[in-house]
Image (cartoon, rainbow, N blue to C red; front, side, top):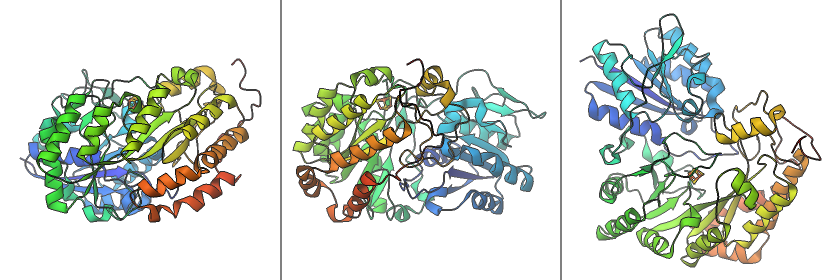
Length: 490
Ligand code: SF4
């Protein structure tokens, strides 16, 4: 069996305006799966955000390592850098196999490989396909037999193999994430996915895949069928990480952690049976309108300390339009249930959905203010390629969707486009107003300092947030539009 040096990269620049740098769970899982299934692998990981290096340096480090296989995982914001990196690697290492994967390739499929020098693209869940590709390289075989894989032919064209990418049906079969390939304590000095300031002895885990809800602004990488690890398998990994690294906090990036309520109860029992005494955070949020008192009690008993709650929009019309269908009263009740346990909650709200009016933005502000959330993030809606939101925007305001530039964008300061029925200036006004209104409550500030895991570290956050809420410089659209009366035809 041919020994292989595999170099996996999590691509994406560190942005001061979006500083979270969680361990790259996607490539950690690929590495763990591949080395369990195949012999003769040496795997190196590179996390661009953690290293705070530019794309030229990423290419330089790959070339310097002289791997046999490079796997690049990336989101839409890094898409424009992939052609340059793959060209540099191809020129320097002609026989190196270059693979693409991650959320952007999963979204746009074949379009992600166009213009690059990659050999193949995995457009979804990647463990089994990655194993098949590496095995083929070791055996001197082609990738023809890997179902659903996009692969480049000798003439440079790209074809998609018949069939669908195989997925891991039983997530208990996933090995523990390959944290040993990273310098774990380095991640303790930076923001993870939760907004709790470092230092924190935290690790990130994902215990389930697939969310059955149809929200049109969300990704579809893991499909719409929920699959969850058993509580025993999950708690085994937590126990291992606690023993090996001294991890105290576990950030779960599941999309639908509480989808299976029985699993939640058993998870809580298992954590307590083993007396783990850990802190849990849910930075991707729990579907707050489906919370029950029993679920909240179980999560708190397991160690829940902090949780994101996505309201997204306060307007029932917008909720329907984007197919989130959140029950707003139940959302408020869910936040309150957690607040009673002093779980630190932070809301995710978005402004600028297609056709959204000023009155509807005000509804989002009013619901946020009424809620018992401790903190809130007000984002601008972003129509990522191949999402339902993208399709809706193409249908309702195609003139705004031309030449969108997602490079290094973030949803706070460098939004891609304004899809709403108000002008850019008005949208930015509502964003500032939302922050001001939300944080301008003495009761909320009291509850914040009482329940926040590290209130004094957070104090650095407030002056900036308040200043932004008054600053007219906050945010600048890359494609400014001025439709004081809304786009034509709405
Ligand atoms: S409920 Fe959350 S994770 Fe599920 S589809 Fe909607 S936004 Fe995505």
